[in-house]
Length: 217
Image (cartoon, rainbow, N blue to C red; front, side, top):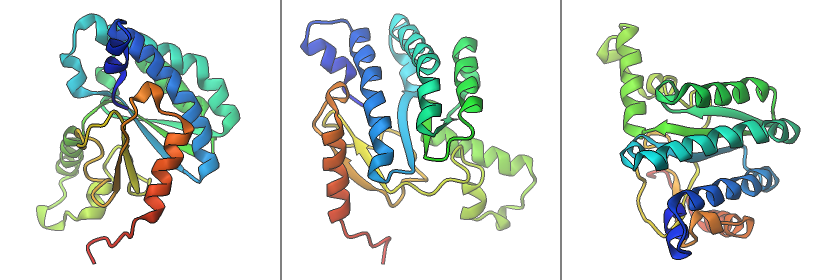
C-alpha cells in the first residue's frame, strides 16, 4: 500500500496525515474484496525497513494501527473476516501486540475471508525464520523440500498468492511474500494508496483474469 507520504506531500500536509488517509482507505477494500471472490487478502501495513523512518512517524503509524484494529474488530467479525498477523509482531510495542492478538482471537471464527496484516514484515526474515524452525526441529538438510518450508512460513495453511497489486506507480516487490508470490501475477496501479478505491481493485482483477498463467510450462 504505497503512496501515503506522497499523497500528503502533494497537499502540503505532514506524512502522518497521509497515513491517516491510508488507514481509512483499507476499510472499503476489505469490505469489497469478498464480494469479488477474494478468499485471502494480505495488506502490507508495516515493513521491517519502515523502522528507518523518523521516530515520530513510526510512533504515529503504531498509534494508527492500534486505534484502527480496536475500532474495526467488531465490524470484521460481522463481515466474517478472520484476522491473521504475519511478521515479527513480538518486536512491536506491547499495546499494538495486544490489540492485534485480540483481533486475531475474536475474529477466529470468520469464514468469509482471511485478512493477513503484514506487520513488521520482511519476506527475507520470513524465510530466515522458516529455516531456523527447520534447524530447531533437526530436519536433515537432504530431507528439506518445498512443502516443509511452506508449512513453516507465517502464512502456513494458506494458498500461494495469485495476484500482487502494487499501488503508487512503483514497480517492485519490496520484500513482500517472496516465496508465496513466486508465480503471482503483478499489477502496478498508478493510484496512490489513499486514493485506491474499489474501482481500482476491480481494474486490477480484470487485468488478472486476462492473463494466461503458465506456471513455467
